[in-house]
Length: 349
Image (cartoon, rainbow, N blue to C red; front, side):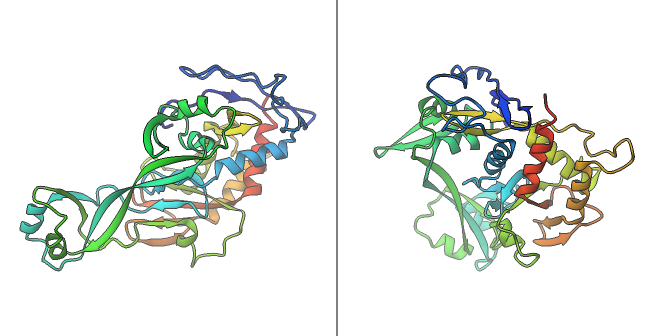
């Protein structure tokens, strides 16, 4: 999906609906994966106290990690995520910014001195997080760079190095440094009078006052519906290949996201869990009745929202979706995602 996928894969084998066995594999180019059944660690499929975990508990753990908010905003033009209502979406479309020098800004005939514009600036932000969360956010790319703040100094590391360094303590607090953008609404006149803007400096601007550069799902849906505390949203940008409309978007989103796997900690180990959903799982059954997945997708299609991020407009269940300018928003309850995981996990093996 985004770089090499973590290949530590655990396949759920359901025995009597309660007990599990998991198999570990090595991470290519990384440290040896440790076997789950050792004297020093709880057996895979068990909690820290050594008690067997039920499929319900396994599913709840999986879904909670799948939907854990990411500190980085989800880009609205590249969305394909299960997220909570508090996850921030970056609503700044690609191509809306441009780089311009101070001199070109002053000479631009299309901009009067008092035309409202937005300047995009960057700053470093320190965030307190855990190695487990950094690894999960890497989404399989263990070579993703990360800046760590230690003792006042910043050093560069990778998700792979963090996995090895904190394998036995994935909940340890670490400080990471991130580059973040912020937006300042101004005018060419004010900008040219700013003594910090020097000759020859390249500025990043938007040729209008861009006020809604980011929002959470809860903020976008505030006027549409009351959100349940356990709501989980699938958000995906409409693509030119979405010939099957919203049904196809929900279908592909469930299959692809569950198939990717998620980095989940069990005991002292961080491994990747996944469940395979057959491509034809939404088709009618032999008796022509609707399948488990087909019923769910139908209801989610009916209840869907579509947000046009170029026109800042929310709609309900349109007949046609527009690639490159709309995101589809599907509201799930966490229990529904747990049911999907349980349904297909129980069929594996």
